[in-house]
Image (tube, rainbow, N blue to C red; front, side, top):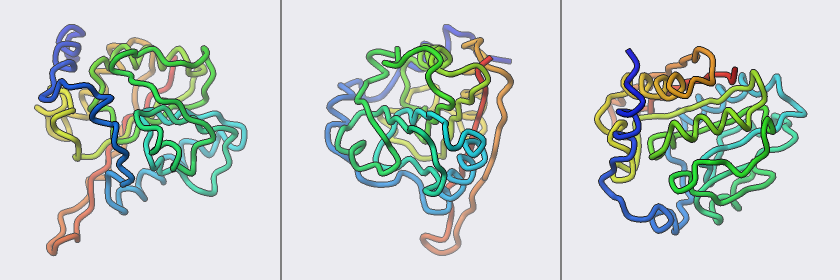
Length: 218
C-alpha cells in the first residue's frame, strides 16, 4: 500500500538539521560516498542503462558532486551535472556542463521540456525535502520513455536526511522511492535492482549495499 501523498510530503520535510543547505554544502567534499565495490556495481548499472543511448544521449546527473560513477569508455553527447557545490562539479571529469541549484528551495529544474534521455540520482535522494515536486518536474524534462534511475546505499548525512528515510531500513528505502514514483503519477512500474553487499570479517573487508529503483517516464 502506498503512503498517502500528504504523509510523504510531511515526513519528507522533517530533518534534524534545518539550517541552510547552502551553508552545509558550502565546503567541497572531494570524496566518494560509497566504497570501491559499490562504485563498480553503480557503474555496471549505468553501463547497462545508458549504452543504448550512446553516442547521442543527453544525461542529467541530478544532485551531482565530485564523482558520477559513469563508465569512462561510454560516449555520450552531454552529461549535465546539477549539484550544490561548484568546486565539486568543476572537478567531476564526466560532466560536460554543470549548474548549481538547490532543489529543496526550488524543485523546478532549470531545463527545457523533454530535453534529457535519462536522469541519474546517485546516493542523494534521501536529502530531497520536496521529492514529489522534483519527481514530477523530472518527468517534464525527460523524453517519453526515458529512464530516471535512483541509486542509493545505506550511508547518509543523518542530520540532512529526511525523516521518511531515517526511520526506514534498506527495504523500506526501496518502498519509499517506489512511493515517490507512484505518487507522482508520471512513470511506469519501476525496476528494482539489489546488490546487498557483504559484511567483512576483517576491518575494511565488507562492501556497501547498492539498490537501484528505475522507472521510465510515461
